[in-house]
Amino acid sequence: TDSYGDMVNEIEVFTTFGIEPYRAIQAATRDAAAVISAHADFGTLAAGMSADVIAVAGDPLEDLERLRDVRLVIGRGATHVLDEAALG
Image (tube, rainbow, N blue to C red):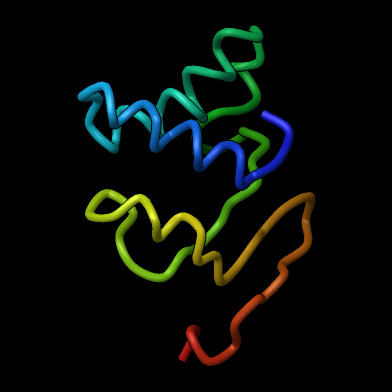
C-alpha cells in the first residue's frame, strides 16, 4: 500500500468479496504485519508494540467510509489532532 487512502480502498475491495469489515481491517493491519514477519512489533494494539493509531468519526465496522474521516493520528510519539471540534 502506497498511502492510507489506498489502504482504505483495499479494505473496501475485500468486503466486495464477502469478507466482513472487521476481518478486512485485520487483514490490512495484523495479518499484513504477520506476512512481513513484523507481527512481534506491529499490527496490533498491545503493551510493548509499536503502533500508529487513528481515531475516526464513527464506527468503521458500520461504514468503512468512516475510515476516510480521520480526526486524530498518534504516531511515533506525536499526537496530531485533525479536527479539534470532533474531540469535544
